[in-house]
Structure formats: structure tokens, C-alpha cells
Amino acid sequence: MKTRAIIVATDGTTTSTAAVLWAAREAHRRDRPLRVVHAFDWEFDEARYDIGAEYIDVGRQFAEAVVANAIDQARTVAPRIRIEGDTLIGHAAARLLAVADSAELMVLGNRGRGGFTSLLLGSVSRRVATHAPCPVVIVRGHGHAADGPIAVGVDDSPAAEHVLETSFEAASGRGCGLTVVHAYLPTIPLWLGDVPAADVDTPDQDADERARLEQLLTPWRSRYPEVPVETMLSHDSAAAVLVGVSHKAQLVIVGSHNHGVIAGTILGSTSMQLLHHADCPVYITRPHHGKEAAR
Picture (tube, rainbow, N blue to C red):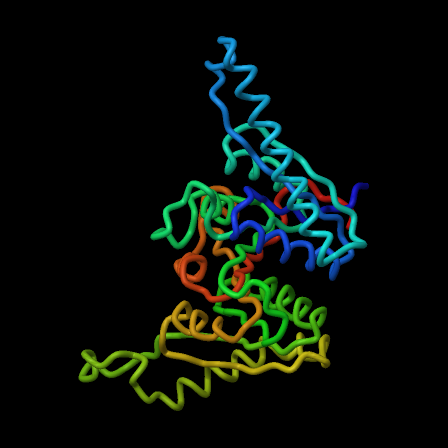
């Protein structure tokens, strides 16, 4: 069966160039093919008039030029990987979601050509990150960084094991350390109700949470003994801690809470805040829900 490719979306902007370079390096690291895609939209009604054919021809030529340029950029950092380019007609988010079924990983920049500079995350990237059936990386911040640890947020959800598997595998493949962040709200006395949870000293509860976290990490430490692991326990929000850690990390990994009617359609608040504010690429990991393919 066909090997899953890493798919990267490009529109010729600076943010999509960063995504192309990140995806090319990742394809090289995983020994996977890279598929570079660009979607261009057009109104079907225009095809009824003479200008319609000309419009779509110009759109296709522009799309092909964008893809060709992105392929050249990818080869500068990963000359030996297999690369194919594709132009898709239709709304970008819808077309990218349609091809995500066959992707090992979908990679996008944080803001597209039509975005306002005041928006921290483009609508296409947000929709794909929220609804894709495959893992998604949004490249933002210092996307080129090759040093620093990988940071991962771990909670008590059933997705924790999959998140840790992805994180340890990524850290091992990059030869870097792993920072595991676990945030929780301690139970505090009523008379301290006006005190922020982050400022409350709860040593016994912290010890219990650390023990639970270490129990969760033990099998992964054994499986990946070469990965240095640092743990961070916080009473603050996971998003706030991970955004802070992202300034020195090369990648932040979080899971999808899968609270939607369709698995993987709803991101938790932590993931969404990271997509807007992290200073490094954000990896939304989720099990594939599309057709299985041999790797």
C-alpha cells in the first residue's frame, strides 16, 4: 500500500515558506515523501462567460508557480526526499481537509495570504487544525529552531498515552530533551477562596500529582532511555505554562480532546491558545481516523 506523505500547504507567503521548510526537514527525518499543495478558489458562475476560462487558467498558472517555488525551497533543506506538487481547485480549508485523509501529517503556516496582521491564526489553519483526521502542525514563531527541548502538555484524559508516545518518539528522533508539563487546580480551603490557585502552597497534593505523573512516564522512560526528561508541575493554566516554555522549545505537542460528534473535531482551550500565542511550531497529535495505509 502507498506510504503516507507529509502534506504541506503553501500560498507563497512568508509564513507558508516557513511551513514548507519545516515540513521538508520533517519528511527527511521520517524518510517520508513530501506533497506540496496549493488551493485556489474560483466562482463556478464565471465559467459560463468567456472570462471564466481565462480566469481559471490564470489562477492555475499562479498556483503552479507557487507550488514549483515551494518545491525548490524544500529541496534547499532536504534535497534527497521525494517531493510531488499538486494544485487544488476550491476553498483552501475544504480541499486540504479532503486530502488530509491520506496524510501522515498536515503542515500549515499560522496565517495565510488573506489574513489580517492583527489575527494571530488564519481561518484556514484554524479549521484544518480543528477538523483534520490526521495530526497537524501549525508552524509559527521560530519555526527554524533546531535546538531546545520538545515541550508536551499532559493531562488526565485518555489521549495522554498517545500524546506521550508522539512526544518521546519526536524527542528521540531529534536527539533532544523532553519537557513534560502537567497543570492542575489544587483543592484549597474555603477561607483561601480569593487567593489565586497558582499562589497556594499545597505540598501534599503536589506530591500526589508528581507521583501520578511519574507513574505515567515510567514505561516511556524505559522505552526511550536516551531521552532526558524534565517535568513541570503547575497550578497555573497549561496554556500559560506551555506558551512560556515555547520561547525556548523547538516544538510544543498537545492532544486533541475529541469532544466533538466526529472524533478530533474540537480542540481544547489549551491547544487553541497555543495556536494563537506559542513561539514555536505547535503539533496537534491525534490518532488517524482516515483509511489506514502502510508506512
